[in-house]
Image (cartoon, rainbow, N blue to C red):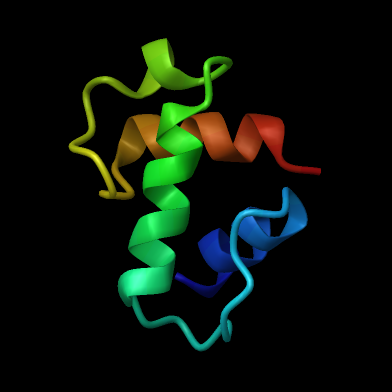
Length: 64
């Protein structure tokens, strides 16, 4: 969880604490990431706001 939060932070989507809890800020950041046009088609298998396998793969590819 903290790795995901760190990756979201590195692309400017997450600004909360990186304690590993899946809170509202984390859900909002994941949902925003999923809506980006560059990743939207790749993450349709995951529900909005859910950090599933497709979202994880897309985030790991895109984040520095």
